[in-house]
Length: 121
Image (tube, rainbow, N blue to C red; front, side, top):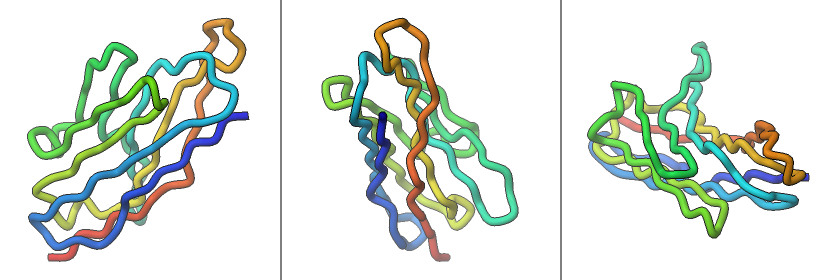
């Protein structure tokens, strides 16, 4: 079993910053990709930022230059530093991890429970 737990959400004023953290634990041989998704009320879940095991990163256009994704492979953790926050960043943020649980190089998707980020104008 693998558990993925996020932390760091909250309420912040526009222009402020938050740092989200996510850690995976359990039977883990290796983690390939890690990512942050978000889902705003009435909208589909969208990929915000993605990082490979070699730390190659990609972002959606709306957060480029404001958000930074990073990871600590030794801790099976991923982080999202969010600066210059805008009201449209308000959403539940979910952590994703692609985990090899058997040493077979087959990777399975695991998700956190989500953490609320609210940006007031």
